[in-house]
Image 1 (cartoon, chains in turn orange, yellow):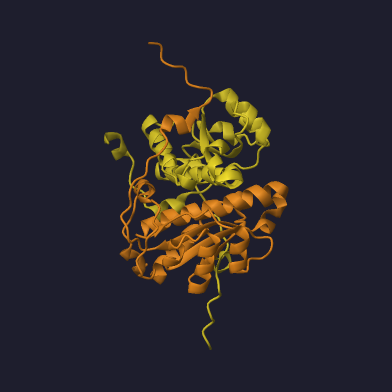
Image 2 (cartoon, rainbow over the protein chains, first blue to last red):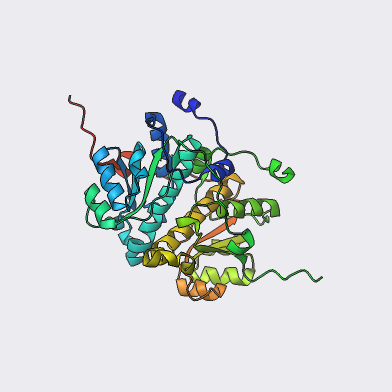
Length: 187
Length: 187
């Protein structure tokens, strides 16, 4: 556990607050120990029936990163990161749940994996940015994905070269609604 | 911040390890301060274009919880929890992204919100279980959802009345694959 001692403990709520989209990265590589912790955290994410019906593609190759940039509306920062994680569905793994498994669960499994990756990255002092706007066919081609897999999220990950700025959010009372509504206290 | 001092700090990786499906709950209510922290954590979750194109429905009413049980293949433990959070899409909020927003992003936003809820709940000493197997129409009806919203996940949340057991996972080298593959070291 020696290598882990270099990673200071980060409280869950603190990581949730600190996680902001990072689009500028240092050239610095990600240490193998940190990469291992990040990937192991993804592997702990919950999935429907614990089937983990998704796949994580790790891209460090410069040429392939450029293909991902091209697939994602030329968002150049993707290639600036030392590593890009691409999350794809793996519908065959959820086939026992029928159409719901092959369309909904596999997509949710991959999405939750990416969510865990972002929080783990934050705790490791790394930054990431969720990239959702891309041409799926171009990404599939760049990664030689099996025909049944569909890429659903990309995360460039690296040491941030920008300060995080807290972005605003919907007011809680708008995002969350009780049903049935709580009776208003009588004035 | 007085009330927060009652919540011990939980490391991100620790919470990720501790989060396991909980299907047995104590009768104990969730304290308002903890509920507030949980909901605020959800509100910090990332979303496409920061549009937060989803809605969280908070259900504490016994009758409505029973309707959710019925909608979810009679999984009785749902009604045993003091609270159920239902995450639904809100496609109109992502309309500026066209079909991709209204089908993919809204579903991912709701899914990431639920993922954050589970980790925050774990950090607060609460347990939850991701429920994905349910009849969407029955849930929509039970919650009087607006016609464009689709429920995509339910989380019963409460104090656990069972010990968590670590479940197994896919080997990392199977879940995560580098592309292009790293050349094997020559023997």
